[in-house]
Image (tube, rainbow, N blue to C red; front, side, top):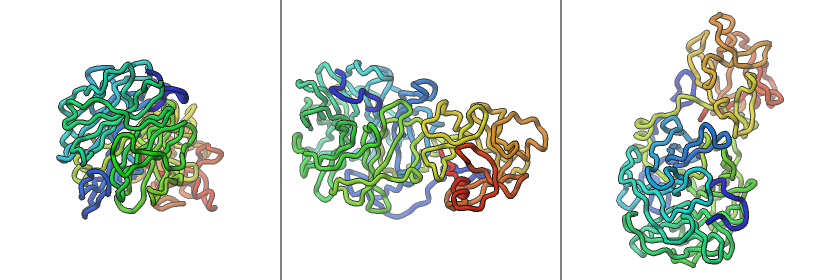
Length: 466
């Protein structure tokens, strides 16, 4: 439940003209998540999330957002990072969406009934949608979970095979005044059993995330004292889970999401920081039972722009391709620095530089990579929020200027995309009219320079993504 109060009892995210765009998967073969009810043919991932940006200004939307990824680490927001569904009852907004493939192969989406940051808004309900393929969302309704004068935060669900029902877990305040993880059981997400306490640590815990059936053990990660902590049980019975792991955090961290690689024996743990425009961090382990995690290099993953409190599910190649076809990849890109991977290319005061994410206003870091103004086989960087301006060099410094239509401007604003000088899987950009020079950062400012040293090669390497 992103951006809630930090402590004490809680109140009652194809190459065209040289740019990276999402490409349809061409994977084949049988892959399995090894937990839950993932299909044997799953080979990609879908993420659901909401957005908060610019201190709850432009870019903030409490609707259901989707992104897809072939590797579960780098994400392509769909529908231009706009919502694909919005609640029409209750608070008329959502937080903390969750997606799960049901036993019949279709999907269900759950979410907190809350719009914005009114933590005193107490809803006994959660939002629910059905979806055959995540291209349409039907049967919108709210599911009542309890009659208590408290909230129903961060709902998630899992299949309890022993009961032959789905368990819906969520955070509510109990009679002792602290948050516990509650559970209701349902067969249809239309009606549910009476609530029970699923996990009570004796102090405030929220954001339960379940991984079922890994070598006979079930795992639930929670937020405790601003860290992500694991619990486990050999059963799925309420009251059976106990803490076991070393807590991980990057500052104040919440919203744990555990997902397994589809191509290796690697597990990833995602966590979200509190603030609007929060930052995701990720950890990995090859042994879920160990309860120890190693921080991932931020070069290896990129959250969807402005994303908050995500959930991730596995999907098939066909579903991945169909989602891209239906909703489309963004018309813009972001460029991540190779050696400062928390920073992205942006303009500030019309000067080009790299700054840490989140960037305000976030549109300063969005670029349309268009055919080069001087050579259509190259690329020019058109500002999204100043569309008459392009990134160009002037006395070797980079800035965004209005295109004056001259050949000099066109040459200054045109670059050839090459394999990354520090990593061939990334990208570097060579100046059209100063062909011995490449775009690089120096003291975080962008310029074009000759490149010779290892440090300079890293300074001149960027990931083109979203």
